[in-house]
Image (cartoon, rainbow, N blue to C red):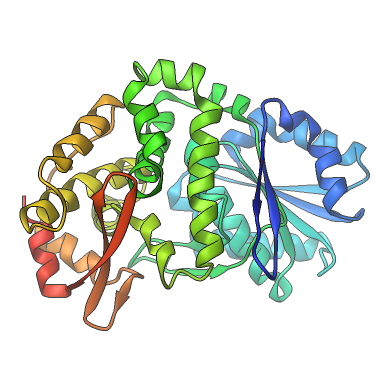
Length: 355
């Protein structure tokens, strides 16, 4: 299956196909001329798939070097980026060469940021290996690293030349990591695809979804994201819909400490929390919070985080990238399958943090 991200200045394809990792050499050769490639991967994914990808790329005529970093959100910082820039320079990378991200969301965000800033920008490709990265972070061109103040505070908009998604690699993904990805899948159903939501309702459990519907949920989620990215590449309008649950979710991640609450878990908490208050305020229909809560629980995701410190969460919210002046643009769901923007003052956001 293929999806076309038809951006006027940088169109590219998303390939979703079981076993497609075996074709990585021919895929890259169809997009790039022979050149140096910096393969960026964390130590866990590199151990699983690095040698295979390195071999296939080398057989296709590419000169490949591997930059490995410690897995986890704690590595998505300026120090890792600087090490990667130096690694690229030491290996003679020029503006005619490219970077490939092989890994989850941390790897994709980091590799894209390095590619977009090294020598003022070189091209890159995404090979996402986690469900979260496959359905969300590998698509759309957002790159970034964390600061000590907020997640993804430093970054760029830079589109990849292509995205290769092999659902088979999810066989090595841990149970918690798969559940985390479902946070983003549930979000996609809520904001833009009622049929995806209905599929999630009909599936028996996580095992059924993982074994029998992986390609369906990946394709549907990617299609939701593809549509909003094409309509709003730079995140000024409808692309904000993708942030449903993220405003509070990012604050939870920040306060808890990156990595202690995973991204998709934080999004699940954020979706339930913001829906609860929005429903109380009459901005979302009666009963929708309970529907969301039940779906989140069904797929093993958390609906709350302890200790819930309203003041610390509020302070984290004030650094959110969606803030505009004294307002912050939050996302609500007037009905399942449709999203809307609700601008809220900083002070009113305190209501949304009330347990």
